[in-house]
Structure formats: C-alpha cells, structure tokens
Image (cartoon, rainbow, N blue to C red):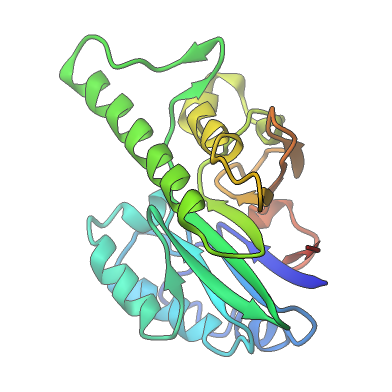
Amino acid sequence: MIRVAAVADVHLGEGMQGAWADDAAGLDRVDLLLLAGDLTRHGTRTEARVVADEFAPAPVPVVAVLGNHDLHGDDAEGVTAELASAGITVLEGSGAVVEISGTRVGVAGTTGFGGGFPPATASGFGEPEMKAFDARNRALADGLGTALRALDCDVAVALTHYAPIPGTLAGEPPQIHAFLGSHLLGRAIDDCDRDDVPVALAVHGHAHAGAPDGRTPGGVPVHNVAQPLLDGAFRTFVLGR
C-alpha cells in the first residue's frame, strides 16, 4: 500500500518560520506528500522561501501545485524556482512519477481555475474579459487531462488547487462556487482515457469552508484538503494497485 499525505492553503509568510518544519519532518509513516496550492500569502519569492524551508525536512518526495495566492505576485516562475530549490516538484499541466516500493505513482497537476458547475457555468461569449476567463478555465483543465494521459505509472493521482466537483464546495456560499472550481477539471479527470490505470484519487484545496469528500460523476474519489478543514497538519490516504 502507498500512503499519501496532503494539505493545501497553509498560507505561509514572513515571520512564520518553524510553523510546519516539525510536522513535515515527522512524515515517516507516509510515502509521498502533496501540496495543493495557496502555500504563500501573496506569492512572493520571500514567502516561497519560507515554504521551501518548512517542507524541505520532509523525508518523502513532495509534489505541489500553485494556488491563486501563489500567483498573486505575478511571479509564478520565481515562486516555483524557490520551491524547486528545496526539492519540491511543482506541476502545471504536467506530471511526475515517483517509484515507491516498486509501484510507480503518477501525479498530474494544475492550479485549475473557476468556471462553475452545471447548470451555472461560464462561457466564452461576450466581453473580452469573459472570453479570457473561459479560455483560462479550458486551457488549464485541458492541461490536466493531457498530463494524466501522459503518465506512465501503476496508480494515478490528480492534484489541483481549484475544486473539480461541487460536492466538496458544500458549506461555501453557492454564489461563489463559480470562483472556487470548474466542472471541466472533473471532466478531465473522468475522461482521461486511462482504462489500464484509472485515476485513483483527486486532491484539491481552495474551499476553506467546503466539505472534505466527494466523487466525480465518473466515481473518482475527490478530497478537499484545505488546512482549515483538517484536524491535524495533514490528511492521509492509502492507495492500492
């Protein structure tokens, strides 16, 4: 069995050194750590260095996606570089495969974007701003699907910041669901054509007041690991072949 720890929305910033290092160092009973975005407060390199230092002590591979807070400073490249300097793999429309006890665990990731869920979804019609909103939603969801299909692994995991289903948004005001996730992410997970190795798990954050568990229409388990929802530092899942 493969044990995966996950957390999102830790929102680390300057002056928060030491907030997570002990928890990360204590991950000796898991095989992989997933960080589902909003790792910083404002998306600066200085904050990203705090994140890197806090999670560097983890004794297992660490795979992450960025969140909207991490992109706020318009320096995704710099934030990614700081995390990568600590050995953290950051995904965006890409995947990584980690071999654990002879099992190849594949993780495909994207930040994702808003767009909503039927019957209330955004469309690429009207003003340029609406077209741009819809285009980003579709591009990042398509990137997730492409990354999932490209994984050469024994078990596949989808990692996003925005929610792929409305079920894990229960508890958040319905008026903002369109800004918390997109049905296109869920469709990408269900339609990735991995008949030989279906997606075993989807993990996201972003919805601080949402629900912890749900499933895509195709039946893939989805878990919201936003830190305000967790009883401890991380949530742990078990994967099998």
